[in-house]
Length: 316
Image (cartoon, rainbow, N blue to C red):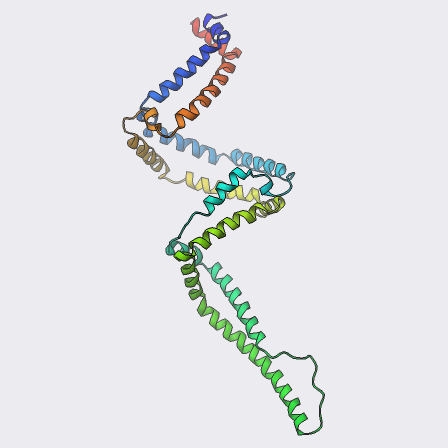
């Protein structure tokens, strides 16, 4: 057996040393040496375009979604039973953060014909029902005719009230429709002003936290029903079409390169270790990364393919 191969296989610390040297070399190199925008951007774009163009990728994603849904269908209960409380508490704190949205953004979201239609239907139904509630209640039976002038007057008044009531109802509905059409924009203004008001900030935060609580208590089955309504296969197709549109964009390569250039310029001449300083990434992740690489490297040097390659390299 090749001596180098034997030592790599029988002396585990040799592989550890090799991995440590590799990671140390990487951390000691300048960021601009590791990330070359002019080289990396076109290759990333080329790979991205090839991936989204390949129909097999789309079919693979659809298959994975189907597998995930099949697995999820076996679940029962609510999300609260599955989400650890250690995650729920900070999530509610995040949802409850004070936030006062900008009026321009809120109006851009709400001022749409779909919202106009919703407001119209709600106002129409509410005001029409209110108008009907003003109509005098009817006993459902015509009062018995009475002899004498007073009795005849009562009967005539009842008939007139019935006719006038029907006419008034039609007039009310017409007036309501006319009023609502003119009130929709005003309703939007009031809604935008209320949502963006400073004194609504606490209520808005409490509402968001309440939404989270309500969603956690909904049966898991309900979420699966909603996903089915979205037509997962069709959704994957549409997302794929979106990605293909992005891939077809002539300016994609330039945009990716400009982003990479910005990162490299920000790093300047700093080494990767200096760039990561203060983030905790090197201290916390380096041991795990090295452990993973060592495990994979040991598996690799134990293969016949590596042994054959090293043997061939040793005897040209």
